Image 1 (cartoon, rainbow, N blue to C red):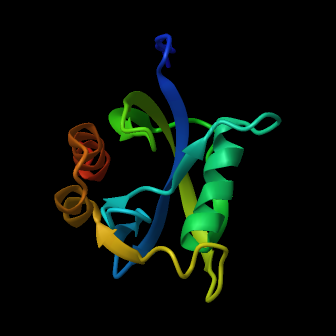
Image 2: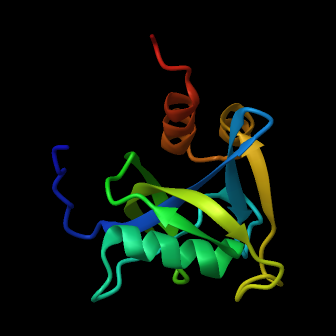
Length: 146
């Protein structure tokens, strides 16, 4: 995949795309944000010493209480505007890595701060507010041509 340049002043985050199979259908888990309670993918800022995939898996554990096999190749990316505590907006690029969930924990670090829920790709696309994330979820959930 071609890497896109990060613009000066642009934030960089990494997200997990938590996946499981239920009744023959692929499901994706979303979590709510702490402040606005919007549905999003678990994601976080870059951290020294962690690859994008490793960071995505770490955020999935902290925000959603899930563990599994993280893919090392991203399945896509999206951008959004992050409102900072000082009221400024930062253009953020989020690289998304697939996470095949094999454990859903009853207790996790941000349990009291967030909700988590499984959705079909179409349902997830309907629930999120970020336009590019909607497009990514619809693309990933589309049936593959034979």
